[in-house]
Length: 357
Image (cartoon, rainbow, N blue to C red):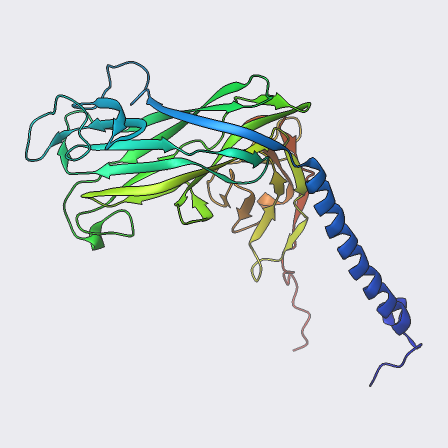
């Protein structure tokens, strides 16, 4: 049957009303997009920034845990930056000074930043893992990269931010099939990664408080998808750029988790998701349980307890109840979402056979 203009159908919707409502909704979407764009444009802040960096506290503060043959320098190959090297080269002895041609090590060269806008990703500098076969009695496990920003008109004008980079030095043996990390070129590659992308250090300008948030490693020619981990091949100088942005110290929940209903056994998995903005966000999910709520961990049937999405699989009557998440930034007050309810509807069971024999 075709729809006739002016005829009223189920849900009390006329064709004219439907068309009018659709057009109205489209207009609202356009107006909302323009409003968001105007708000962003109005709130964008031009910042004049310069940066420097230094590696420090290898394997923790002090020198007692330094890796074998640890060396530092502020130049390598005629380029000024911050450099560290470690390990005894496989065909040599411990060099008297930093030698990234034979030792393994890290280098960071800060970018010339200039004028940027808050909330817009920019290149912070270039990172290189000089990955050579070395022997070490004390391994290189992690190191702090201290970034110093100088921002015109900020209070304070100079601020330091510490980020911890870890390194997994894999054995130089085996084929790629048996290697822990991919992509792979024999022998097995290593992996560097950040344990924190945010810092509690802040500055104020224009009456607002900001921080520096790392976005991660990315190809210097394509920063569109920065990642927190960098797989590095042996016998190479592995180069990636480090990207960051200046973020206001405000945590905002833009989308609360919504109620879910499951009907075991056909549907016995549920997920709750929160949407939020803020600097270097972390998440912790809870289940309401009266006076003391339950802090969830990644223990069956729960997974994603520290991510934006909590999954419950399988969801049974024992998991029914209300769930919420606390979202925390590297600075700014933490925010708590509205609770979402998990309802578990069990299939009916036949308790009496009324069939006629």
